[in-house]
Length: 402
Image (cartoon, rainbow, N blue to C red; front, side):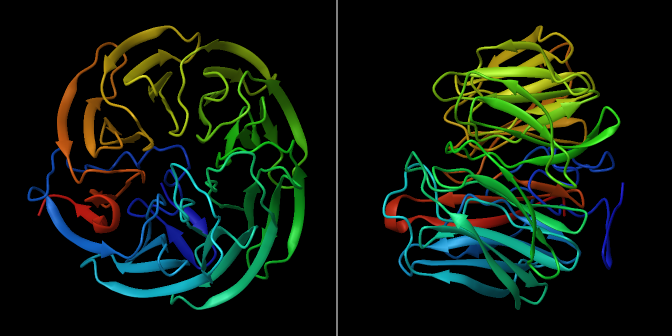
């Protein structure tokens, strides 16, 4: 499975954006990552990460790119590591000064970066605005643009990652003022088009997928699930939902798409992408984390300390297993297994089997985990934290069989 981008073919051993090659949390079928690890077991290397962030790593060729923020310096930056050895190659500061005064359960570097094969795109919230910047692969700034003013209803910072489609960088900015999805030309930074949103604070990253014969830009939030034409932002359909606020990225399987949210009420729902009609829903809350849809079934790590498997066609519960909460990390399918991780750093690996829950392994790394790992090259790249308060240190681990 190769994705052709300008000047680069992203192949089976790359992870170029949030939730992987297709944005749905599924690694290439050739991948065989480890199922067991610890601080000593199956560690290829580990690298100290400056500052803090919930952003996930992306991997292109021999480089790893990661967004981070250093609160003491009021600095937001992109860091580049060597993929083979974990050495830090460069760090480019995007912004210095004026972080939001209040932020709860979040960091100042939660959006993951993405790439078009030529640039790395990073989004940060600072100085009362959301800003997107483009860097080349050597860390030089190519362009920077203000997406818009950011005045959230709730003091939870910012969370949506940028995505790339047909030469445009799409950035979501949902808040009280001029809420929108904005498309910027990847080469020049020029604005191309925008989608006016309903002005509610939401934190979901959109995703583009070809479903039911059409390219669709899927985004939930503001008591709606919407599908847009990703080439121009025109609305294809809209379905009502019970929640105002969502954080997870939508997923799909066949002609069905799935969304979940958590405020003020929990709801998970399935929608027919052809007709834009709701097929089923339940009251399970899958809030900060995304779900996983694969081969006719939906898998989720819910806020009520359980993992679920539902039949995609009608929502029938296939199995349920108590695990851990709270949870922010989204599940990933790799090597026929699904990897679930809780905020305390504990991971549960299970077979992607809808008939029964087959536990493969349980692991622990660090005492805090918020960033979803990347799975490529038969390895796992994961950002975890050790310690508390001022003594807390984040590390980037490369896990694999030596």
